[in-house]
Length: 626
Ligand code: ADP
Ligand code: ZN
Image (cartoon, rainbow, N blue to C red):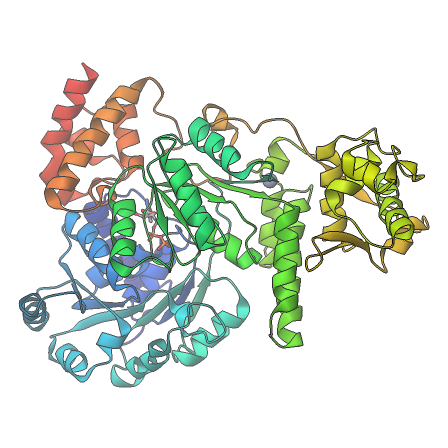
């Protein structure tokens, strides 16, 4: 089949057919970003590589061409556990979709295979290892027509990434076996190296590459100092996200377990998830997180890939992630539905010390250590910056932008101050202590001396006689900790993890001590971030929020709709969001349609859902609104 180029009359025709499918089947009024171009290109028979951030709307990019084109679309997806939910969401919208995977019974498999042969499917989801079996390839040969191949999470072909799956490399066979059938690879991984690898390994040299902006404007980035991790987390959840879904990332399994128990003990519906739990428990927790309305998953980074729950309202980091890539990927799981969401992190000196130590004592090659040290420094830079977090984040991925007015630094600008004098006091204190006693001391002791506190330990070592005793009484403990953390980050002071976390000077300290280097430091802000009710501060011109408006006075109607949705999702055995998204329920609560015709214009209500749920919705609205 000839490939259709943009601008052809045929291309315009394809574009309008795609728009019709978007409206009729999915109930959405318009394409987002580059979706239309991608959909038209694929519908016209071209290959594509799509790089789009999480929540950007990648699924529609292959689902719609599969419906526009003759035949069945084949979707390669790595996570069997999540396939069923994707299929359920499509079925709710009236699309003939099915999955083939190892968790199905023989009879179920045969039923799906029959549908493939008789041409009764629009979309087939299959795991790569299964697709590559002779049985499956022969099955595809027997299908009347294949519309396209979509390879989701395509970064899994990258041997350098942490999601590498060897079977992805063998997907290259699709290019030879099915020439002329369009293939699209999709990923949310932004870097250039991965992109090149996908093109080479999947034989996509002729594919058109679509790169979207990696900005996630509805996510509010916030990074604060760790003062009392659990209490800070609980306050954050209680005041801003009570009764909502979220993910809390921790570095270790032990912290995951402890934090989950702590939250659960304070009436938060929290569950743990990490590789140390048995399969059954992990799956049960994942499934509850996806299906229920307000579960908080406390997890290691083992959790998250492929989870496309749209209404995760916050992602919290209790420990510093190892890199900006990791931070971006993990925070990206918040707010896929485009509604406001929080990326909230706390970090402290302990994080820096621990992660540097882990790198130092690892057996890895020097070259590798250098790379991961640079990555750690980059995320530390993001934590300590006084500039817009988003600007910094996007800059890391090579994208230029302007201050966003939706991060903590934009909303409550931190002050910078000249910390040179404070740094010199602290450094001299470290130096004097060591000189006087012959060994070094930890942060607590140094700060006590600076502040002139005659603690038993200070008196024991005669530190009250040092010339630096009491020279830093002008700053409080928190301020000194903040100074110290920044000095450690800048490698002006070293924390010796192997010797009881004692403080040491470094070669670079001398420049500051001798007055050759000035230091601008960040002063911790005391001001609170504006609360949810004040979120209209978001700069709308940048945010593609579908329905950012709060439901306001219609909260009871919204709650009634949520309760109705809970019933339906239980009855059908599908996640709540596959029935309707929060954004659709919000729009319903706000506009309160009175007829089927009015319902039709609500985003997220397509023909099938209108037919299935239209009258029930009107009834619920009427009862709750009266
Ligand atoms: P990705 O796979 O890129 O992370 P999804 O395909 O899951 O993103 O889409 C994210 C969310 O945005 C989904 O809930 C989807 O229904 C919604 N969405 C995608 N495209 C549109 C659109 N054009 N209009 C309205 N909602 C959309
Ligand atoms: Zn900002």
